[in-house]
Amino acid sequence: MSFTFTELKTAIQDYTENSETTFVNNLSIFIKNAEQRIFETVQLEFFRKNVTTNLTASNRFIAMPDDYLASYSLSVTTSGSKNFLLMKDVNFIEDYNPNSSTTGVPEYYAAFTSSDFILAPTPDSGYQVELHYFYRPTSLTAGADSGTTWLSTNAPFAMLYGSLIEAYTFMKGEADIIQNYDQKFMQAIARLKDLGEAKQTGDAYYNGLLRRPKS
Image (cartoon, rainbow, N blue to C red; front, side):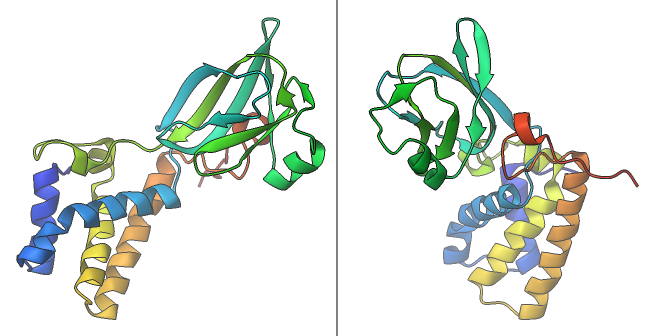
C-alpha cells in the first residue's frame, strides 16, 4: 500500500466524511503537520545528507542547510586530515571561548539559532568543513497530485493516521476518535523505528547510533 498526494487527500475525506470547502482547503496543512509529527518522533537513517563548505576566517558562525534537522557529525579538514568537532551546548561554547577574537582550529560546535552553528575557537582560516546530517525531505504536498514520497510509499499508515489526527483536531472531533487515531499512529511509528532509527542527543561520530535490541 502507498499513497499519492491525491489518494491521501481522498482517504482523509473518506475517513472523516467531510468535503466542506474550508476543510478541503486545509488538507495540505494536515498532511504537512503529519509529516512534521513523524520527523519529530523518529529519525530514520534513510534521510542522511553530506554537504561541504568553507569557513570564513574570524567568523565563528556557519549557516545550517535549509533542510537541516539534526547533526550526525561535523568535521574540519586541516593539512589533509579530517578532525571531528564535539557537539556542545551554546553556554559551553561561550564559556570556552569568551573572547570571539581568539582564533584557532575549531574543536567544538553548537546550534546557536535555528539557522546557524557557532564554533569554538573562532576559525583562523577558511578550513573546509563537512556536515553529515539528518534532513527534512520535500513534502508530499509540494509535488504533483500523482506524486509520491518515501514516507507516502513506505510509511502510508503513519501518514494517514497522522493526517487524521490533524483533521479531527481541526474539526473539533470527539476525543475518543482522536485518541484511537493517535494510538494507530504510534503503532505505525513503532514499525518505522524497526526499519532503523538514527536518533541521538549528540552526533554519531562520538556517541554512536542508537541501537535497538533484537527481539
